[in-house]
Length: 85
Image 1 (cartoon, one colour):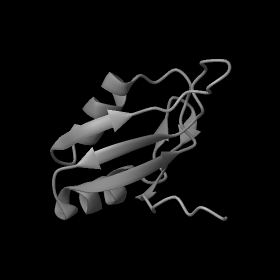
Image 2 (image 1 turned 90 degrees about the vertical axis):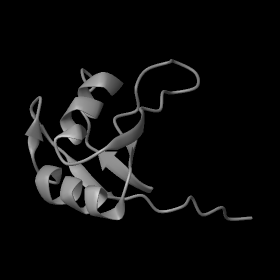
Image 3 (image 1 turned 135 degrees about the horizontal axis):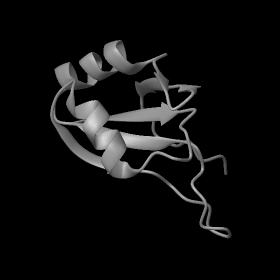
């Protein structure tokens, strides 16, 4: 499985909307839209897990830069969070 980072997300999109959008490029395993801990509002980005690397690459090709609900999506391979101690 390959996890994608989706940036510049419209606050109107739901996890179901994203799943339907990414399913056009391959099998979607999971979708998560993080929310602000204090306010509960969406933070404007999401993580989408695709079944295979080929599905992930297809999603990047098809969706990176695409206008969705008035915003240009930024889709890339998710990189692990680096902690600075």
